[in-house]
Image (cartoon, rainbow, N blue to C red):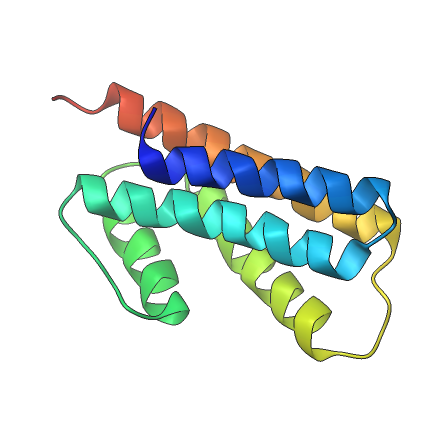
Length: 123
């Protein structure tokens, strides 16, 4: 397994544990990071790196989705997770469990799609 995907899977597991303990704000953050690490892994596969979150999101959409054909919905999910994480991390508002579950589900979709995309790439 790709090391970045392994990290993404651990972040998904952490998000699940946090949700199970009603710690929804950090769960959303961990879910985003799962998707973020998957996106970084995809970029590395095509020889791209970025130093900032916004750069990773932009390059992922441009290179992995548009140029290399990953489903555009995956790019939209990654961006939505970034917004959700920002709200969870920087707002005093509580995150509802349903929102945390959605973040986890969306992140799992991103990680699964990227893992399949990497596996289907020619060596």
